[in-house]
Length: 239
Image 1: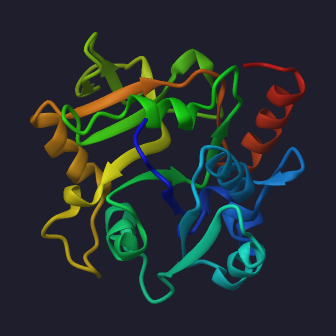
Image 2: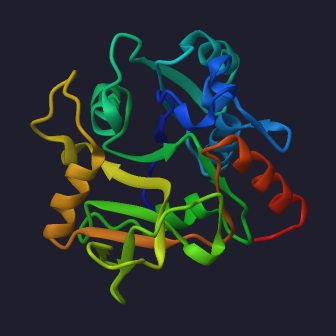
């Protein structure tokens, strides 16, 4: 198993689809089933052996800083984007000094139920830098709650990914978790605004973007209505 003990949590978004809730609290602090979205992300990271997590902040940043101030598992480092949101790729680039050579990446607006083994531990075990630049966790569309998209990827028998492209639908959505390496960000400067999709598309073209299917139920909490959907799914024991 690869040694991966740092993570980046993307938590700097404005949460516009979650309004009016996010007029008063940042989206990562929205509670679902008695726990904030951010804790739903950080707790499994700790269980998977992550010792340090970088959390970027922008909207109502002081509330997130206060929420993680006492955390020790994992220890949280704040990456400040109050002056400007740097998008997903730019946010990670700013955090690189605090991350290991290979690290986990998590979105702060989705989580999942576990069935057997930890999905993050499965990812760590599956990551092979000789064959892949990036490993994405994928949710099967039928095993997703709160996601209203048409799917993102097709998964080949060798684990390689292709985009949905012009197809009406694709069987898998990106589940908000990935493993990446610092080498992927070569040539990118702090303060540069760009999406991680630019890096993933380059890896895809080289045949080095891979996927692993989530074992469980993916809960995407992007709107106020999705909070209730996720809580009902959890209460019903779906997964």
